Length: 512
Image (cartoon, rainbow, N blue to C red):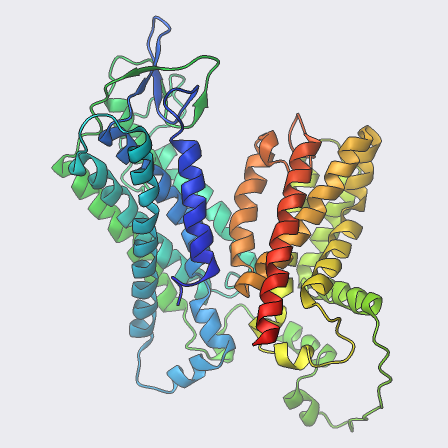
């Protein structure tokens, strides 16, 4: 079922697109692996099997750890929301066996996805490969880097799924920072990153994703180099291409990667300890006072019947209106944000007055959990048939949700748009276009996938690149030093295409 999902197709397309950027034409001015000598010469490998296999393996390991989480997270949550969990809880199935089954299923699925993604590296070999194809040099780095990454990602997805506060929209945002800080930055620090010449002093003992390990191993292949780059480097002139021996696969390296495979046991054990077996009374982080207030404001049938006050049924006068439906949905998006709406509002206001990009970056980040699942709310809660049977619902749910989310982000983002317009009309138009693009993409992907994971998984890396001054990813033109209106308009065009695809799927679903 997962392999047939839209998320799997998007993941494979993302792997191919990333491979095109990461393994560019060898005759160009970009390379994902290069080194510099004391005399100023800058070299890069020729495109033999060792280099393409190494580059593809490093890329796929990072992609499966970052994006794979969004592909497998939510399986326990789905059992909880659909009532399957309480049925399983009444059986002799133990907590450990249930979660181990979930872990094994996620790991197997991610393994298939990574194997399919490796075809992007094979495609690069068919396009640019030089010399004979060496299966050992091509596939062994892939296995060493990807297998621990798959296991740890599946285990962390399970841990987030059973942890209150991390099993939904907030967890999708938190994972991005866990990935960057715990799985990338921490191993880099353990390897001794920060050397002025870009040298890592040791292979890190804890590095399940393998980013620091592959950087350390690559640096050992050219001992005389004074500078080394294992990221995409673009120069004004082509690189000098030379033969490259590839990384050395030793018993010690195999043992180290096998030990990192065991790192997955830590989040897996934590998940088993935290799992509540679908018993609401055992969810440790639920605050009783907050729950009572929520029941009073939004009574369920059980709490309504338990109330001593009689229930008065008042006839409703239905006046269908698209504008009213859009306003009502916009209000529901705001209320569904919970406590997050107040930091989001504060960040939105500060983004219009505080110099620099810090407040704007926080505002754009907090938008993710607020809008990611809005278009799929009814599918996730099982109320789609009830909601869309009402006469006041517009004919096209896709356009209805798109309008509501567009209004939501436009109102919240008004201070940022006004501030950008004060700098120049083009910047103001770019900020508005970028915000509308985020709303459109969230709506379209929410309808296509019946969830918010895919939107979160795609949005957060783009946001990070924009905050890191990559103008090509700055969809609002407010985070980089050289914003471009064309980039914002390109994102808006992409959003229109995604919304159109969702509208087509909606029509097909209605005909069924």
